[in-house]
Length: 472
Image (cartoon, rainbow, N blue to C red; front, side):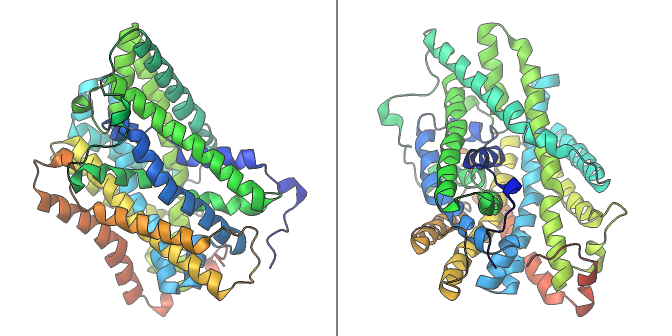
């Protein structure tokens, strides 16, 4: 079936698509993670953009313009239905660890509104995660409308305005003759090599760029997708790189690397810069802006992945009926509650891990590991679909698809394997404890749990007559 049956009123411009993509991918949250590298952050952002962001964008565009149903349908048709379930499960399961890491950032940011010393408190972080997440579940379970508007304004409220202010004041800070906290010579553009562990932080950048496959669904709404989609993606990639790189550099100018918290680094930088200009009273205001943007994004994402898992499970019987039940508002409340119980247990780990930054990083790695499994399946499915259905109508055909998939697959696999190596910042800890937590979280949640669901499923678990839509 042709994908070009789009009403005239449904066309969107490539500029609008570029901005939509930027708003869904770019954030200030990973900036302190890369600020510890100083000028080398430029290199460490551009490399994954080339080997991961670009292949993901173009490959998912072809898949979305040829087949509806998202990643489940792509992988199910390209490989098999069980692999399709694994892909959509990983897309959902990554949120189980994504929310604790996101809300850990929210907790540290919110601490600067009340008491900055709380940013290093595990109990404060755990409490904020639990209260905020369950509040989000309550709001989502009631089918509340309007949260999309809050998330839509997040790019301006919580990213562009604070990011631009941080960069401008950072430049003024340097212009006043203050020395940069990080070396800024040309020789510092490449990261210092101190063994494999010194490069582990780059894994977090893959998650920073993830989610492009979701924006690819809009490719069929472009008038000339063959020309306009690559143009939109290159513009979005440029904007995303600017949003990621410039604030990270600004932080490295002001805050020494050994004083940088991976969760509170953004607020540290704002606090230090504002103190230099005698406007520290702005710090709580910026904290509120960052928190509101993050919460808006959380509410928007809270029900999305679980909804996709629900629809697939009802059609194929992958989840027990208890997890497929809807409340009166038609929301998959039981899935959200079970997810919330796991999130609560993870949040408590913040209270028992002395270094909050360590906990934040571990959960970020697990999130990336699980999501990368989905990308590995997507790249394999794309090659197989091109070979199995070469004449299937596509609104957009990615150039050198096999090469793009090869680069993206190898980059994703390398990032997944590197994630099991403790980063140099945590060299004093027990590496086997780190390996156990990451491997248990990533492989257990990403592979073992969906295998058990698939192995134990029963014919009675299929509830297709209750599905609202079909993923095919």
